[in-house]
Image (tube, rainbow, N blue to C red; front, top):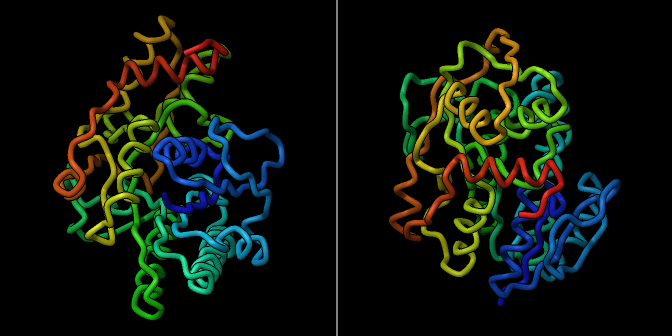
Length: 307
């Protein structure tokens, strides 16, 4: 059994990760602000209320921990694009302090939630592996790549082991559409409120969608089996266009909603699917939730139904 702290434990992925780590028998410390909501995870974790931007709180969070899961972001792709300096001043700068605190606390390994789509940029390919160049064009992805490079610095300089998880497009329960991140939760909220669903471009953009519980089931074994690489793509390995997702939303909700078409932002990648062969070779296959079923579970939660 390991001691693990999840930074951002009350967030979308973080809350599921707390449950997954605890279910695997690990002792979990859940660090978050918990400012407006009660814990959304179910596991009996150690709740630690704190501010990510406080060095003292971060030092307390990592104290006595074997593993640190950095799954907190102060920005979204949209907010980072509006004010790129905010991402630098908060996410980047404070992550460096988190890594410094981890070194001082004797942490064995840091796991960082990077981005698996935007970090590769628009290189004209359809499938990307960890060996492909990183050519991010958005401030959000640039910040993620910068943090990956700081992970490398702390490995070389201080011997702090780390693993960057380039996660595709996660979706699922506990995802908050108010954060304006993720086509599926935002569209479902629009559908429930009878408003048009926004579609950027002609609907041909392709993304690699991964149900959040599948994502966690891919991450947890990386604690029990020491990763051999510094970076892993974490995705489904298959792509769905925006039009295909909208069709799935119609099937699941049985609602024929209106579409509001807008111009595709210049920083949006046209087509990205992640090659997950590095992960599968090392950790094996994970049975994935079909898109319609994942949407059904997400929609049911939004309507307040029992799953």
